[in-house]
Image 1 (cartoon, rainbow, N blue to C red):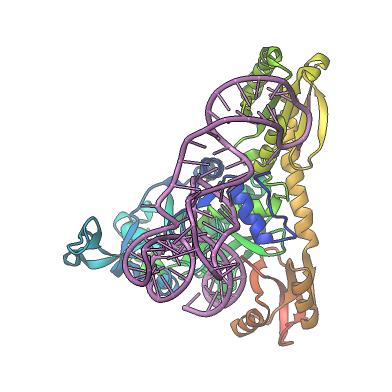
Image 2: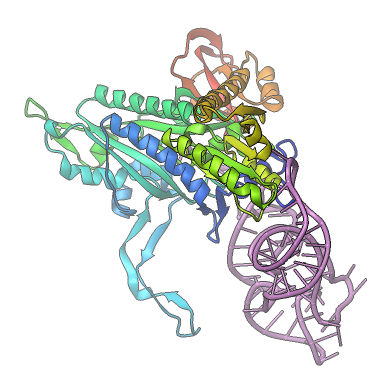
Amino acid sequence: MSKEITTREADYSQWYNDLVIKGELADHSSVRGCMVIKPYGYALWENMRDQLDKMFKATGHVNAYFPLFVPKSLFEAEEKNAEGFAKECAVVTHYRLKNDPNNKGKLIVDPEAKLEEELVIRPTSEAIIWNTYKGWIQSYRDLPLLINQWANVVRWEMRTRLFLRTAEFLWQEGHTAHATKEEAIEETTKMLDVYADFVEQYMAVPVIKGVKTPNERFAGAEDTYCIEALMQDGKALQAGTSHFLGQNFAKAFDVQFLNKENKKEFVWATSWGVSTRLIGALIMAHSDDQGLIMPPRIAPLQVVIVPIYKGEESKPIIDEKVASLIKDLKALGISVKYDNSENTRPGWKFAEYELKGVPVRVAMGLRDIENNVVELARRDTKEKSSVSFDGLADYIQQLLEDIQQQIFNKALAFRNENIREVNSWDEFVEILDTKAGFVSAHWDGTSETEDKIKEQTKATIRCIPLDNKQENGKCILTGNPSTQRVLFARAY
RNA sequence: CGGGACGUAGCGCAGCCCGGUAGCGCACACGUCUGGGGGGCGUGUGGUCGCUGGUUCAAAUCCAGUCGUCCCGACCA
């Protein structure tokens, strides 16, 4: 019918686009590189956001909001950060339009309304936030400062892809200030753990925690920690980052505090963020050729009920039975929709909710009611079963948990099957070209080698896993000695 | 920024080469038969053919320009 989905095998990126657009998560907008997040996609984001927000608050953070605009002079204060983002900044230069004297009904930028100082639209907020923190921090008693912001940011990317890389995107950015280096590092890894827990337990996407090499480090950070996920096409996706910023921003913005000994010290900083990109990870980790597969814990809709009518007289009977089920499900906090719309047939609805990835579908007709059962279909395995109406809501609650677990286990098995240790250059190249996935290999620790490998294979070092075991080996490219393996992959 | 494709009804497309009444599918509205995997039949609604200019008696179609979008690549925390 009208909603054919390209298969993964035929064209993986077209498949991805089809899921986003036909699954009604988002659409291209009339603004280059920017997407419209549609209600279904936004509901997913809200569920993710709400859960993360709870986790941030449980770890002592509070929310605040800082401006969208960053005066250029503030933006350039931290040199490395500025340099890293300079190439992809949108800049506001004027504050007024006026009627075009030569073209009625059209507007032009008023050349008289040029700003004294250009405003950079934030690609990230370290600059404006640290400039503000300067006024908030005087004493060790003001520390730690644990603030998070939910915001949009703009990065003028050359090439965009729905959710994975858009010119404007939604995210959260935590910015914390600490009295000691140790405490800041502890915060950095704590938030990495929060991200890993969220992504694994709620999104059912297994991740590897690690630290970035200097090449891949956030501009302005001393260390960048990350969680890396593996997509079904064997490419890696950075799902979240947590940065130890050292005293770089404190020094750039002169943020000092008096310690207990009445001596001035620079503050230690972290920042950490995840974005709507996570939705891209969710889609590519779980979905299949029939459509999206939503993990129950963050699914915009957990259960859909489809009635099977046989003539007008059966409607009240089905409606009544469904009403009691809905009541029971809602009492358990399960989101449910009764789709008794008349304009589509049951078969159409089945396909539609599969496309949208609703975890559990209940179908109920007179035949079922006579037998005191319903037909339950789970989206992840597409299994259908006939289940007694008695105790159904509890059964569904358990089923949702099973599905959540099953989706995670499946993704975990796939991820683990696709981490391969290699010990030679030929093997390295062959694995990348034939199987992709993560390749665990020795590296001599130099940026030059990393660059060369990237140049020749497009693979980058995704991370040095945190729980890495130390072992002696030889770099796959140079043969120089190495003390541990790192994870390479081609990445989004 | 390089390569490719595209812009015609809400969506997806044909028509363009060879200029001459604006088409199809889906969706939508109404009616009806239906209903356990993307229904059938009937009747309808809906379009300044991306924009600007040119050629012509006549332009969706030819020419020039322009704007925009997508895909692949380069780039990217």
